[in-house]
Amino acid sequence: MECEMPSINSNPQEIKEYLEQYKNIAIIGASPNPEKDSNKVTKYMIEAGYNVFPIYPKEDTILGQKVYRSLKEIPHKVDIVVVFRKPDAVDAIVDACIERGDIDLLWTQLGIVNNSAAKKAKEHNINVVQNLCIKIEHNRLLAKK
Image (cartoon, rainbow, N blue to C red; front, top):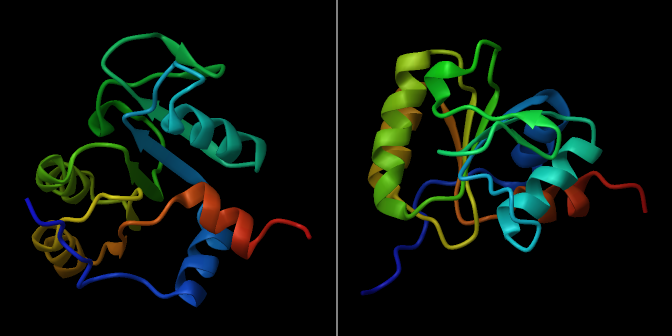
């Protein structure tokens, strides 16, 4: 299987602005396992001062945060949806973002590209970052040197 390259993506200046402006992050696929990248990213974003809403099928809390089963369950405004799922799962995630109506940014982690879902998100005024790690980008663009 050939990997898809992002044909829709935000540039570094836009990414910096998103990270400065948006503070409420849902992380789909957040893991309670401290060895997993999704757990490390969740922990980093909490420590960086963001309001993080983990989405995971089990557990009640991850890193002290209440766990939700879906985007629909989160009773707060969600600015950014970070995705730790396979590319084919992004279509349904975009549909859930559109249904919520309050998502500003869809962010797929390293290795996750779904250009048709990204196009649909953009058509519904949801900005898109694909194939980048939010922790790495935050550290690169905003962390104090």
